[in-house]
Image (cartoon, rainbow, N blue to C red):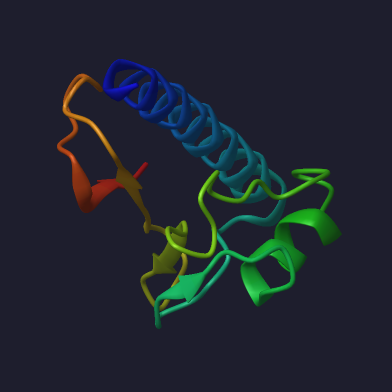
Length: 111
């Protein structure tokens, strides 16, 4: 049973990494077409109905905003600088098996 739980956690981590790549692609498309990333100086939890999600879907940079497989326990979050030329997407992983990332909610990507 313990190994099945580990397999499930690894599968959720793989999905998270796919979701983060989806965010990065959508943000790059948004930046190319709009000249900046969505501005959110305060950290925004990505829910699908938040301002960042609405900006990305409104600009047709993404059709559906992904949610963490264990939402609301874990969530993706987004923040940018005040001029929208840099951003951070923060996320959690459950295992130490994702290369370059650590178990816990201390992970992030930037452009």
